[in-house]
Image 1 (cartoon, rainbow, N blue to C red):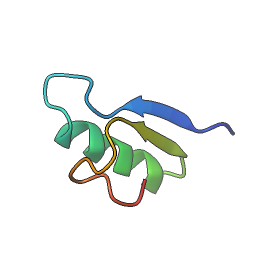
Image 2: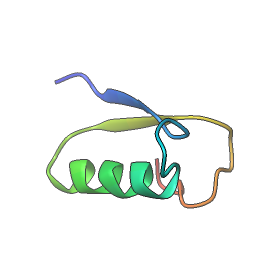
Image 3: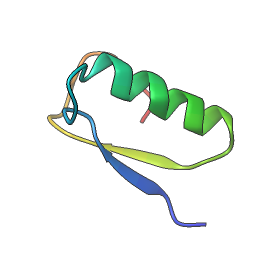
Length: 46
């Protein structure tokens, strides 16, 4: 399966809610690539 690219700064509650959702997707076995500025807080491990 191809990974899903997600804009880490997209949405009203970014980046915290975006990162939380990405972590849930990864836990469910979905590959996620977060797109945004390097070193964005909370994005470690992506």
